[in-house]
Amino acid sequence: MKRGAALALAFVLGITLGLLTPLQLNKEQKIASEKPSFDTGVIIPALSISVYNKDGRLIRSFTKVGDLPTKNFLKWLMHTWWSSASSIQINNGTWTAEDGSTGTPYSGATHGAVSVTVAGVSDISLKVALGNGTTSPTIDDYALENKLVEAPVTWYAFDANSTHMWIEVKATYTATSPINITEIGLLGIMYDAIGTTNKWMLLFRDVVPQISLDVDQTLEVRYYVYVRYG
Image (cartoon, rainbow, N blue to C red):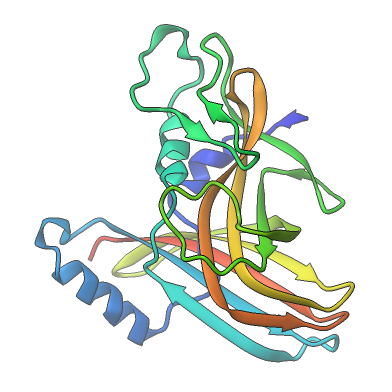
């Protein structure tokens, strides 16, 4: 496994699957207005999915805005703000990996993102998992209810406008056999995440209306985290 360059820090601002429409931005503003203590700097996750046929024609799209991340998301952020725990104190930093193991990084180890091979693509530090679970997401989720396949995150972008700034990441999955998808998750891998072992951490989990893919149809998943400042 090869160390990734500050990927997790870049990830902190954003994960989404799609572009927000003006109507959705109005929804974000309403959410903010209902919580006066968060009039500025509100972090708004979003997920956008698009389905294309084998000829590249868009046949379906869906967007979710404002669902909660997992606890692991903020812990992931916290864990990117230091390199070695040998000279610092970490309070409430325990997290649960995708495989169910629980703990904190090794105290003397250098810490950060690493890269691995996902679905045949090398040098990947974020991945999207697709499954058919239907249980509503919670902030304590650490894995999909029933994972079926994975796709590497291979596209990253930062952008901003007069009211928001965001980072977007994208993964693409092309079906090799018919598949029904009802849950989607975004995961990141970190060096020595638990003890001296590299682990995948579930950062977001979303349950969506069933997406049915036939052979050679493609699902494009985009995760964003928007920061509203205007």
